[in-house]
Length: 515
Image (cartoon, rainbow, N blue to C red; front, top):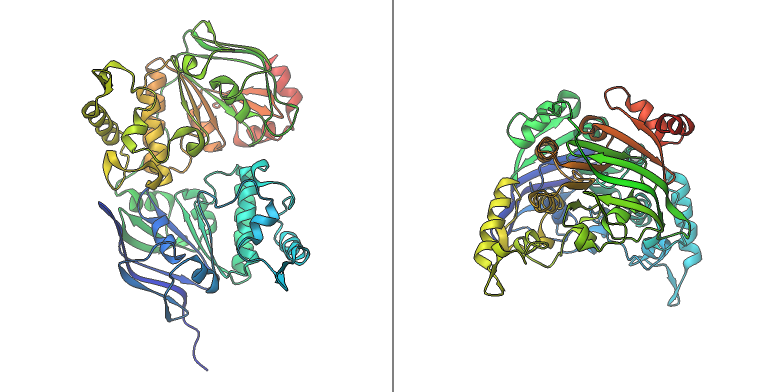
C-alpha cells in the first residue's frame, strides 16, 4: 500500500500577474492534512490572490497545484468544490434578498425528477448547524442578519458541500471578540476532525492562538514558513513588514479643550425592527480627546453613527457640532465640520467602479483647487491623489487610476482614511478604522489619529477591537442595548471589567457612575 503523501495541498512556484503588479511571485505553500495553516502578510501582499488561485477564481501564469501528491487543474470554483476545496471570502458572496437556506444550497441543490428537494436540504443544514454549533435562522433573509451570522452562512455553505480543505480569507475582520472566540473554537473542531484549514489573517494574536504553522508573504514573495510554537508576535511582524513594528501605541496625556460634539437624549430607530436602536443617549466629545464607543456589535453603535452623520434621521433628541444644531441638517452640511470613516467601506466609503483618485476627491472636487473654468482639473486631482497615496502607503496595481473595486480590502480602507483625515475637520467619526489592516498599517493609522487629537481635533472612535479601545481611547463609553451604561477611564479599568459592561452585567453600576 502506497504511503499517504505528507501534504494534502501543494502550491508550487505559483506566479500570478495583473496589470502593473506581480501579485504572487514564485510562491510555494504546502498544507498538511488536519492542520491549521496561517497565511500572514501586509495588505496587498498577495494572500487573497494566492487563495483565489487555489479556489479557481484566477489562473496562474506559472506553477502547479497538487492534491495528495497528484497534479490537478483548477479552472473554476466548481473544479475546486469537486476537489473538496471551499472558501469563505473576505467580502461574503451572498445574495441579500434570498433566505439563509437558499444561499447555502445555491448551486448545490438536491433535486428529484427536476424538482427542488428543500426538505432534505433543510435536514442536512440543520444537522450540520447542530453538530458545529453554527446556529442561524434558515428562513431569515440575509439582508436582515448580522455580519457574524452571515459568516456562519458562508461556513455552512462549505460544510454543505462536504469540503475537506477550508479556506478562510480574513474571517475575523468583521467579527466581535465573542464571535472571533467562537470561530476559533469551530476551526479547532474542524482540524480535529481531519479537515485542513488555510487561514488568511494579519491579526497576530489569532495566528499565535489557533495556527500550527505560518507562511509569511511580503510584496508578493514568500518570506518563509515557520512553526507557530517556535515564533512570537514580534518576530512574525518583523517578517511580515520587513522592519521592527511598534505594537504598543505611544501617546501623551490628553488635554481636552472646548466641546466640539454635544449629543442630548438621542433616539434613532432600528432599520430591522420597529423599536429604537438608540435610546436616550447623551454625551460630549471635546477638542483634543479620543472618546471611544465600545460594545458588542448590534447594541446600537451603527445606528448612533447613522444618526450623527445623517445617514439616518433621529426620532428625537439634539446634536450640536461646533456650537451649531445639526439635528436636522443634511449630510453635506454636517460634513462641513465632520469627517466620517464609515463601518461599511463598500456601501458608504467608496464608489467601487470609480478610480482611486476619483474616490480620494469625492467630497472635495467642487473646491477651487480641483476646478478649472468650471471643469474638474484632472492634473490637480492626480497630484493630490499621488500625495495621499504616498503619505498613507495605499498600494494598488496602477496607482491613482486603479479601480477601487480591484484593490485589496486593507488598501481600500487606507484610501478612505487618507481622504477623511486630510479633510481637516473639527470632528473625526472613526468607525472600525483599522478593520482589515495589517500591523504596520494599524501602527500608522493609530499614530495619525493620535496626531489629529494632539492637533486639537475631537475624535469619536467606534471599535469592536478591545486592544484598540483600551490603548487608543482617553475615555470609553460603553453601549448596551441602545443605551450608554458606563463611562470608563482606560488607565483605571481592565479588559475584564470592560467586558462585563459590554455584556450588560454591570449596567446599573455604570448608570450610577455616569449619572
